[in-house]
Image (cartoon, rainbow, N blue to C red; front, top):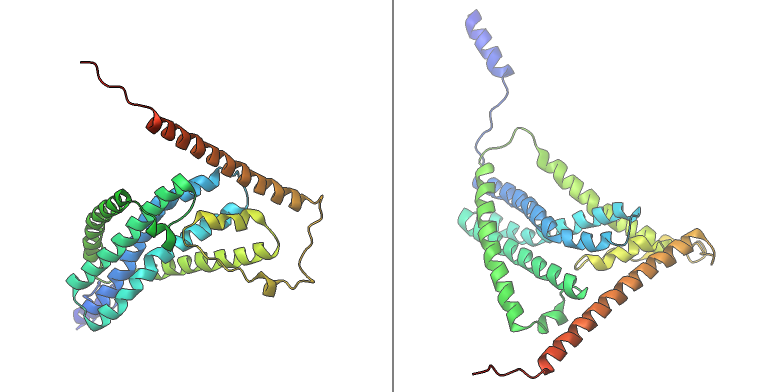
Amino acid sequence: MHDVDRARARSRAAPRQPTEVTTKRRLLRWLGWFALVNVVLLALVGLRYLWYYATLGPSMAWIYALLAFVGQMSAFAFVPMLCLVPVILLLPRPRLVHALGVIVGSAVLSLLVLDSLLFAENRYHIGVLTFTLLAPATWGFLALYFLVAVVIEAMLAQWVWKRTERVPRRRIGRYVALAIVVCFVSSHLIHLWAEAHFYVPVTSFTRYLPWFAPLRDSLRLVPPRGRPALPAGSSQMRAATAFAQRHADRGRRHACRRARADSRAEAQRARPQRRPLR
């Protein structure tokens, strides 16, 4: 009897082993972790945006830039994936959900790659008007990016699916999701404060992220009578003016380089080609 009681006590004290999960619950867990993997992929592609912002020099706004960067890349990855939640609840079929997830992730990844290249060349992001102006060769490269992304996303989807077979002992996914929400919300609140107090190093970062629309209703945050006035000789005014001057100088240099490259290309096309000697 004592041996039986000891065995029961050991079985109760022993940690519970991970158990099998249902298909619907496993698909939901797969969707969350697959979106998180896409956040890492999009962040690797989007490092180019931070690279161009780094040329403006060190500033306290880098904390905001990192928070906004993580929040925006997470929004790109998670928001499109939310469209698959009704599919999982109504048709919990792994092959269907995996295929749709790969297509959605590949579309977002290929668009971000194209936008990063376009921003590096022309300093603007893809929009509705920009799509109508794309050359046929650009559409071909976009199709190539999409095919490469499909291969990468398919391998990652299969890897994540194998990892979600059993329930993990530690629920770290909740803490990761909480950290992403904190980054997203805090970046918008910081921009709201910066716009109300005319802090240019923060507000100027908006143009570096694609499709980034932070909170701008600063009039409700600080009433007109309470809004700080910037004297002409104040340090904050000098810092804002210097920061804006660096923006303008950098834009002028880029425009000059583009003009010189276009003039050389025009001269090259206008130059008569020499006939080969026979």
